Length: 361
Image 1 (cartoon, rainbow, N blue to C red):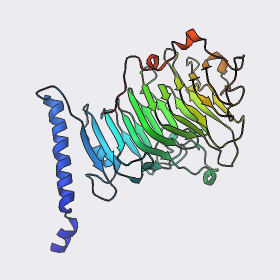
Image 2: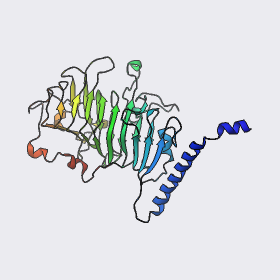
Image 3: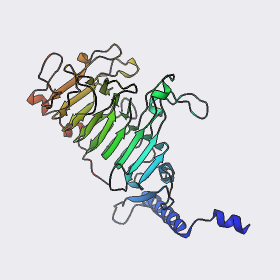
Image 4: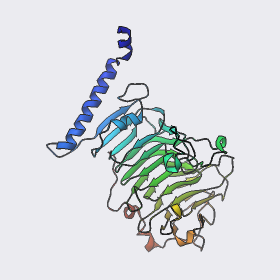
């Protein structure tokens, strides 16, 4: 019995970390229930480390420890390492930050390999595109910082599978801030969505990298990708062909704004479209929108950079450019609409964020 007890007891340092975590979480509950004397709520930090030196060894375990109904900021600080598995932040746990604690966003990696056609372990069917996400953030106020989120599903090894879309990050929330992250995959890498068609979902991404090949920035959110790098990659068979954006914007919303960024990648010239209109569910009431402005476009971008999708013409929706540069840029034409200066004043970051100022916390 003594030997068994020694095996199950935690190391003293581990016990202290767990106790500190429990105390902190109780404090969060107390502050949310009763408030503080000053009315201010300090951010809580939960530490994740694969080697056991943190309070939790998986990111999901830390998220699970956050009380349902949480509204105070909770920072899940993830020590360097590769964490394989999925992470879901449900809508009941607002204001969660996933933050890598390494010196680089390459140091902390959250990765998994589900695809749309991957069968669920419980036998209930495939995950579907949205369900394939490595990280799914459904709570308002979500932030991610200084880490990599990846889906490394092997398309080449699964060509017999129906449903090769494999999402790295899915957001379905408002006031989402993605700062200094890498989001990488192949098809459908970054799903920027909303909780419902009628719900506003603002996303601001800055100083980041998005990597993929087919419709790899898609969804119905009102999203700004600012001062970032969009990297095009070849398909599973080595070919160069793809689409950067596939917005599915509601008619009364703003779609995607790619601003002050760079499009590059080791792919063939004139092989990628800037985007195409995704009318999810063949919903004709949608009005997909994407604007690329003040962005450097590599030679990989086609001279006619927009194309149709599933029977819907891009010309019936909202696609435009403004003052892009680089070998992939082009002048105004029927196949390449450009904003006028006056139109451009209404398509700036502040117009997308609509009164919200993203800030690190």
